[in-house]
Every structure is written in C-alpha cells, then in structure tokens.
Amino acid sequence: MKLQTNSIITLDTRERYLVLNKAILDNKEYFLVMGIDENNNTIASKVAIFESDYSEQDTYVIKIEDKEKISIIMNELKKTMQK
Image (tube, rainbow, N blue to C red; front, side):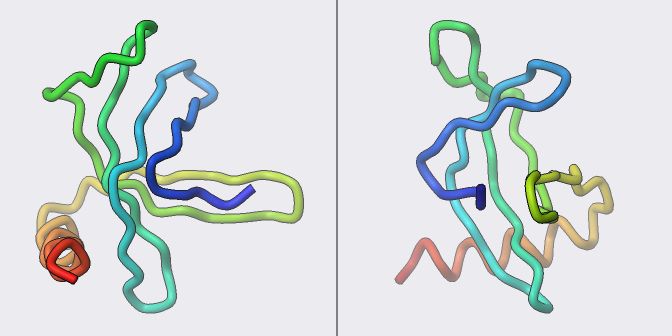
C-alpha cells in the first residue's frame, strides 16, 4: 500500500505518524510526518521526513537524517503547500 497524505502509518516499532505532506525529488517520494500518541493527538516535537520504498507486498520508510537533504526536501514541500 502506498503512503498517502492525511493517513496514519504505524512503524514496526509501534510508533505512529500522521502523514502531512508529500514531495517527489529525483523520482523518490518523501513525506513530512508528525508523531501521534495513542489518542491520535499530534506530538509537535516528533516531526520527521521519511523516504518511501515499496516492494511487492510491503511499504518501507527511511527516516532522513542528513540536514542538507532535509533542507532541499523542505523547500520542495513548501512549493507544494503553496499550490
């Protein structure tokens, strides 16, 4: 199943995230996400950018840690928010 904005994803670690926005760079999908608690309340201190990777049956996410890459992705996300 592909990731979609305004959906909730659960990682293998049982962490849950709300998918806020999507950007595509170099044919890769990146998602701005915010953590949520067991009551579906957002956790403002738990914001991340995930890169998606799909296999035939599963969806994998990779948390982006590189600050330069985060900056580039955030600029692209800002453009999509302005449309």
